[in-house]
Amino acid sequence: MDLNSATITLGVQTSREDNRTEKPILEMRQLLALHCKGPYSPDIREFALILRVGGEMQEFKFEGCERIRRSRKEKYITVDLGFPSSRWKGATDSSISRIHF
Image (cartoon, rainbow, N blue to C red):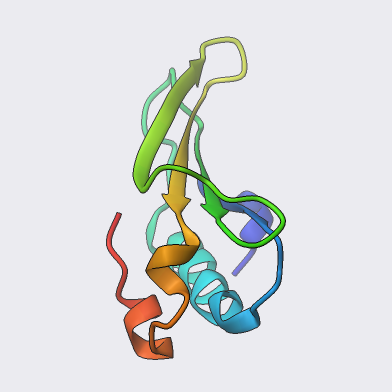
């Protein structure tokens, strides 16, 4: 499986104060690469998801999807997925894996 050729990609912005989010993020990237292959249309080559995980260095004041943008020239759609620290701090590892956006 080549994560670089995936047509749904997952980028992450995090302060890395707690590594419990790393495993579910890696699993999500692998599942997207395995099951979500395109191209989806002549106008869209990639969906770029950006997961913003809040923490001590920077907190994101939203949860779920925000800032959906489209680049006609580069043929992609991107969306920010907010995961504030209040949702994962104090949560169990298994509940972090089951978060729905």
